[in-house]
View 1 (cartoon, rainbow, N blue to C red):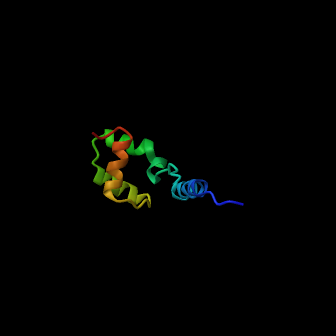
View 2 (view 1 turned 90 degrees about the vertical axis):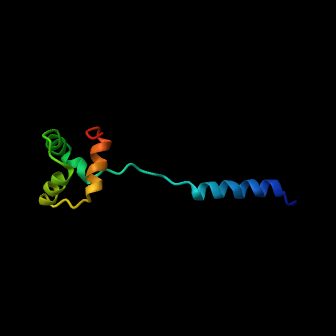
View 3 (view 1 turned 180 degrees about the horizontal axis):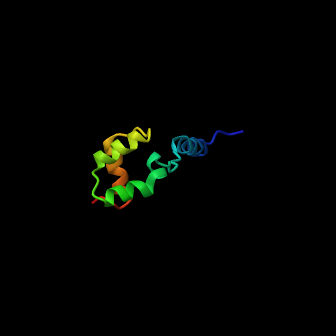
Length: 78
């Protein structure tokens, strides 16, 4: 039985590639549940800060930047 350096090197490279490969799943946002309401509020000229307060009253605790990014992602904020 002989030792093939190139074969072993290739096997190790493939293992490293498999170990480092990450699987990113698209996670649903807590805000997606209230999409219709949030977009309606935003279309009625309600500010992201006020939307954040509205969400807090619904026991949804988020940071202001989360609301802003969610609005940008859903095409409501430029």
